[in-house]
Length: 100
Image (tube, rainbow, N blue to C red; front, side, top):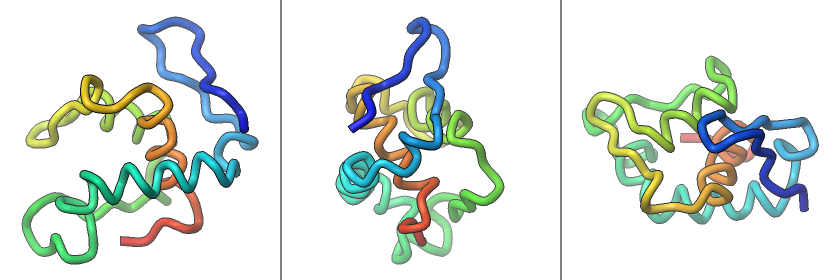
C-alpha cells in the first residue's frame, strides 16, 4: 500500500496514480464513506441533504480539501478522521467503484 504523501502539514497531499488505484485505499475509503458521508451524499439522501457528488468534475486534491476543511454547510472532518482516512475516502470517491 502506498503511504500518505505530504510535503508539509499546510499543503494538500498529492494523489499519484498508484495511490488512486490502490485497492486498500479504495476499500478503506468505502468504509469511511459508509460511516458518515453516505448520510448526506448517498443514494438515499436525495433530494435535499447535500449536493450529489460528481467526481468527474473534481480533482482528488479538491475532494480532500472539502473533506478536511468542510465547505458551507458541510462540516470539517479534520478532527474526526485521520489523514489516511481522509485520503482513503478521497481515493474511493475518485475511483470507478464510487457511485451515488
